[in-house]
Amino acid sequence: MSVTPATPVTPPRAISGLREFWYYFSQNTGAVIGFVIFVLLVLIAITSPWIAPHDPAKIYNGFFLVPPAWQEGGDVRFIFGTDAIGRDILSRLMHGARYSLLIGAVVVAISLTGGIILGLLAGYFRGWVDTLIMRVMDIILAFPSLLLALVMVTVLGPGLFNAMLAIAIVLQPHFARLTRAAVIAEKSREYVVSAKVAGASHMRLMLVTILPNCLGPLIVQATLSFSSAILDAAALGFLGLGAQPPTPEWGTMLADAREFILRAWWVITIPGLAILVTVLAINLIGDGLRDALDPKLKRS
Image (cartoon, rainbow, N blue to C red; front, side):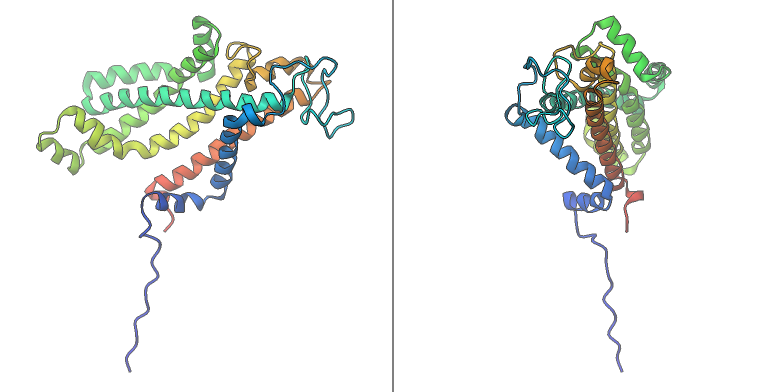
């Protein structure tokens, strides 16, 4: 009597590329929820000039500090109410999403690019180059990030661009240290040695051979830095050193509303919730990216 061997059940190893990434990413329910929220925020930011119910800078005389539509005394024309000078809060939130997401993207782009360059140089050449770059990074990391950004913006002058530049410089050491550690780990591997023996230049070894294998942790760090940039920009805006009025940036909205916190809760609570939801969604995406990109955390 012959026994037919059971067909082994294999995990979805055949899934490759983006499909494999999405498989492991989707195992994290929180990451999927964060991704959906983030996509909605991006869509709102892109389409805000057309879907916002009002002009974010338009002042409606006689509608000062109107409560949200669901509260007594509210007006259905202003779903989230109005601020102290009669501007629609919902419209300002929608347009403010453009500034907050732009800040995050620009800051991450600058800090990621600078951090990768410095980390590659430090990890590849080592010696005095490594010592010099890492000591500068250590000096930057020795200061609280928001305090250092505050000092830099004070020196450069208040404004959205200066705030983004200061935050990018503050976040850059995280990328530099992460890149350096990854380059040191990859530099001694066989495929790098083989490429070096084959005559590859230093530039090719760094950018083509080593860097692509270091991108996993950098992508996760970029996601987390995105949320940090939004928070720091909102803090600088709240202190009057970031985006300047009447720009509908969320931190600036909080600064304009702080004196009305006891008599008009919505003018400060709703922008604060927008920042909270955005940062939480991005952090959840970061957790999902960590699960999907780190082989040690992938589920079998």
